[in-house]
Length: 179
Image (tube, rainbow, N blue to C red; front, side, top):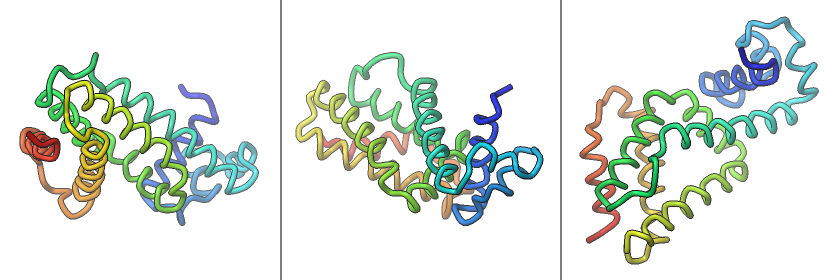
């Protein structure tokens, strides 16, 4: 059983995923966590403190997710990297859709909060591409990150009923990485 703060923050992420940032209130978090009214405000005195803690929890969950779903080592070639990235996008859109929805809502409300995470992703991808000998690795890494973000948004919205083939997604990533 998670500690009370973790329980509240996970409930807050669920509220944001379902209702957006406008739905994030102390009372809504109390209800989502099935705790007495006033519990959230005892831990997070105001909305700003709650949002800051939710953003910290999101970063923690993202790190855990990358560790759990990430590859055991660096990719051996472009095909392996493309497959890993396709699997990650699909995991974020399906198994972790609530967390992804919350991340998107938080990023619209607090764009500065996701900047560091975005740069970490692009920098890591750029290093992997450089190691694989891909020309203009930094620009290609940004292209792939942008594609992944757009695909995630579409899989959560206009294409939510789709069941995309990971090989098709990997193929698109390979095309972005060039010859």
